[in-house]
Each structure stands twice: as structure tokens, then as C-alpha cells.
Image (cartoon, rainbow, N blue to C red; front, side, top):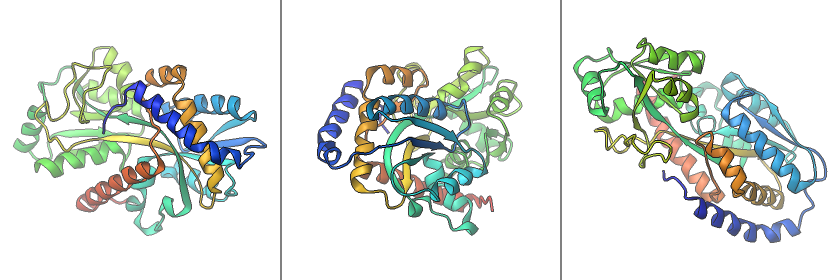
Length: 327
């Protein structure tokens, strides 16, 4: 996964705008309030950027665009609520790639595949994950972490915000790639997790930059690496996993998108996608996303689908190998 230069992002968005002109000419959507449902809680990073998007779309559309949060239940509360709405574009759902790609394999008995019930409408943003340890940790790089895990199986611990999260599956991915066996410890609250890492109650954890930043800025957390192919511009001194002595294949990130109930008219979907791309190309919006270390995305839907397919293949293998189930 590559970080996007702002000029490339704007050029891509403009190309979408040109491509979408014909679609926009054929629809007068929207003519009433549009509701953006979210599987995330109020005040979370995805919620905040969705509210930024809603404000800007409201200006473009000349209609109210509101956000309604439906967190909990592993994403099923939001999924079930929006799946019952008409497929007309007036009810859209914000999900991350784990809701779309991991959920079917974590809840096998439900046989619920979100992309059978929903259509991709627009990518929103991408966020990478850092590998964080206590500032008191003796580990200086990924080589140290992996050697410790190999020396004493099940003794190295890592935390995440819930079973089946990117933080959990990313740990399973390291085990799979390196032949290690580390112990996963789930936490109920993100704030509890990074305090636990800082206090050496758990050895390490994945975390987005905004979720770890408060503890990092206090000097109690240290980043061993970023689980991505390239360094992050906010932390140019933090090496990639490969540069720090870990497996180069490890690329732990989350992609957040808008979806709609299956059957949304193509011209409405295209208009929404084009207008979302316009918003995400706005320099002021980009600057606000930067404060969360979120990279706005304007991929075509075909690429978004391919990325989610790749994630599902990876997650399916990791979940099966580790025998993870939330049924």
C-alpha cells in the first residue's frame, strides 16, 4: 500500500469528476436528506471524518447530510439497520475493511457476507498501523521482538481492541510469517490498551497514529516500526517492518468506505462517488484528514473491490489457521 501525494490525489479526483459528468447529468439526486450511517462510535476518528464529509457534501448537494452512529455488535447493528433501507442512495453506510472482509469468517454460522447485501459506493480513507512498545521495552527493532517470541513461545504478549480486529489478526500474521507463537490479550477500550502497553502490562500492540499519539506524545510509547511498505511522512524516522528486521510482506492497514444497499441505481452511485472524490480533493479537507494521519482515497470502485478481496483472502487464511471464531 502506497501513500498518496496530494497532487496525484487531486488529479485523480478531477478525472473522476470529468468521468462522472454524464452520470450527474442523468440524475437530480439528492432531493431530500441523505443519512450517512456509521458502524463507529461518536467521537472516533472515522466518525469525525465522516462528519467532515457530510458537511462538504451538504454544500455540494444543497440538501442536509446527517450522520447516524450505530456502533456495536461487531458491525451487525449498523449492517442490519441499513440493509433494510431502500436502495436509493439516501441511506449510506460507513464500514472499514474488517467489517467487509473479516466479518464473514469470524461469524461463520451467520453466513453473512456484506458484499452480497451491499454495493461499494466510494472509498474514503486509508490508515496504516504502527507497532508500539513501552518506552521501557528492551526491544529496539522487529528483530528483537521476533527473537524474543521465538525464544519463549506464548510468553510474548500483544494486545488489541477486540478479537478479530486488525490488531489481533496482524499479530497472527506475524506468527504465520515468522513461525512464532505469541499470546493475544484483547482489551475492551483502546485507551486501556495503550496505557497497558506503556506500563509493560502487555508487550506490544498495533495502533493507528491518532489512537496511540496521546500516549506516544507523553513519552511512554515508542514505535518499533510501521507495518507498511513505506515510512509515514509524520514519522519519517520510524522504519518499515522490513527495514526493522521483520517480514516485508506484513502490511497492516484499514480501508474505510461508503456502501449502499444492493440495487442502488448506477447513476446515483456514480454521482455520489464523484462528489465524494471532489470533497476528498479539497485542500482544506486533506489538511483536516492529515490531522488524523488518514490518507483520503479516490480509487475507482474496481480497485477498491480488489483491495477488499485481497484482504478477505488474507484474513480468511489467518482466521482459519488460528481457529478464531466469534460465533
